[in-house]
Image 1 (cartoon, rainbow, N blue to C red):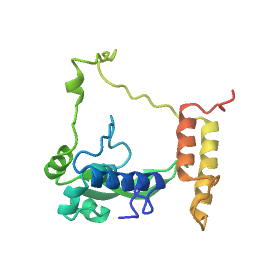
Image 2 (cartoon, rainbow, N blue to C red):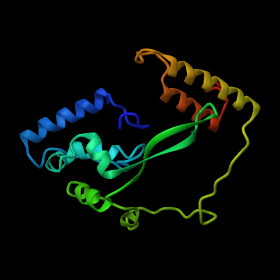
Image 3 (spheres, rainbow, N blue to C red):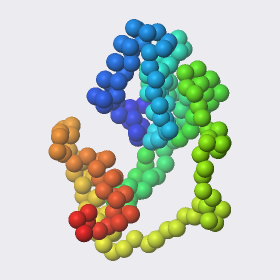
Image 4 (tube, helix red, strand yellow):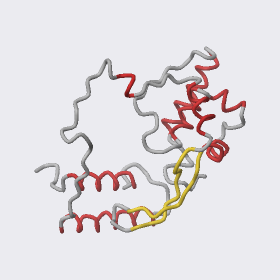
Length: 194
């Protein structure tokens, strides 16, 4: 499972620190040690659900033998491979979690520690303005010649990252930076200083 897009087999130091601290605090105050708050517990990958469960519902995962990511992923995730447009404007096959499976069981485990508030629950407290057209509008624009040239720069950066034969060090270019730069350029290609 470590080859899936969005799944870092090494994890991050921050996530590891939070996990270790959550386990320590849980041993001192079982069942009432941690409170996390998020408006978006799953934003980038379905694997984020596993992280949240490890912090707040570890005992339930342990009882079911799902405390390791691979076991959890094979129980609750469906993996697909699809062609995905890269920042360089080329297509590449990418394997990732596509959907959850065994959803009722997953929701039951999640709701054992999570207080879920849906948008309809907030309507009496939060006024949401109506959209002028009544629905979202998707507006597409053709890329400019300057943007196409910039995509070639992004492609060269991606190739350099993929060809690097060592782990990234502080100051090295990383894929997240390339993707972020591509997103920013898609919104507004002008330099930030202009």
